Amino acid sequence: MSDPTLHAITQNPDDFAVQIADSVESFIVATTELAKGDEPDSAVPFLLLEISQLLLAGGRLGAHEDIVPDERYETDTGPEPDADVLRERFAVLLDPVDVFSEVFDPYEPRKAPVPARISDNLADIVMDLRHGLAHYRAGRTSEALWWWQFSYFSNWGPTASATLRALQSLVAHVRLDQPLAALDGLDTDEDLTEDDLAEEAGRVMLEEIGAPLGLRGGPSVRK
Image (cartoon, rainbow, N blue to C red; front, side, top):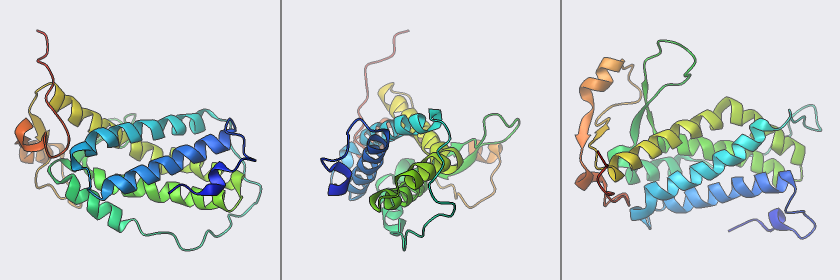
């Protein structure tokens, strides 16, 4: 349910802060609902859409001039909701394709990809966004915008970008009728090399992941 303070009639819907807060809240609400697993057939396409929309807000924050909060020290937002339930639900929902390989910094040469989990990434993103939303709901708008901008550069932005790439790749593999190299059985706590990833990657065909995750094969690619 949307918080009424985010849509008060005294707030200008064209205001930058209102638009960013709306995008943040929309993502949190949507992912929380998806994690319940009530519509598993739509999970991956909807996650692709939600991450894409969130990154538009992130891009606006990134292009904005540096935001300076009103207070020198950050006000304590109090206890923050635990994201473990969200993480665990997505881990179950996305089990066949949860693990993917990621390169943390594309400008740092010769870095091997490492395994990551979509479920972990989604939980981390939500935690970052909730922190800023707590400031916003308490009326500390500049603090909220500063936090969202800072954490976009430092954490949730790169995490969301990596997740978007994984989801887009997953959808593309299925829609183009191409077998998917999934990281079956990989443990993200292990220190794995690129050779390990290649050796242990399993083949997950369309019939194994398409229907349960809401994906359908598309027309054949033109030669």
